[in-house]
Image (cartoon, rainbow, N blue to C red; front, side, top):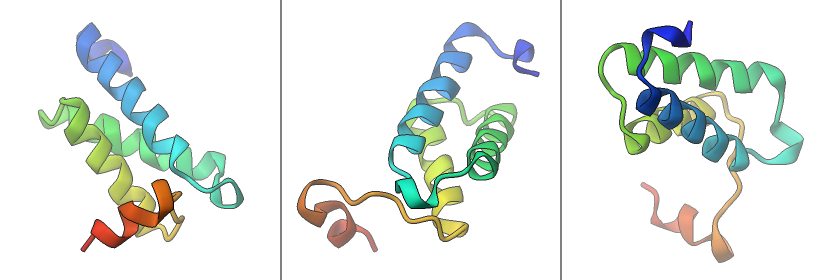
Length: 83
C-alpha cells in the first residue's frame, strides 16, 4: 500500500500519524480512530498533499470530525486560538 510513495512521503505520513495520535486524549484513543487517520493520510498523499503540515492538518480534521477530542496544548492555548 505504501510502496507507491517515495521515502520522503512515507516519512511524512509516519510522522504525521505519530504527531496526530499523540494529540488524542487517552480516553478517546482507539485502533479504529487511528486507522481512520491513517487512511485519510494515505488518501491525501495519493492526491498530492504530501507535506508534513498538510498531512497533520488532514489527520487533525479526522480527529475533530469524529468528536475524539485532542489534548489541549499548554494551558489550553491551542483551543483558544482555534476558530
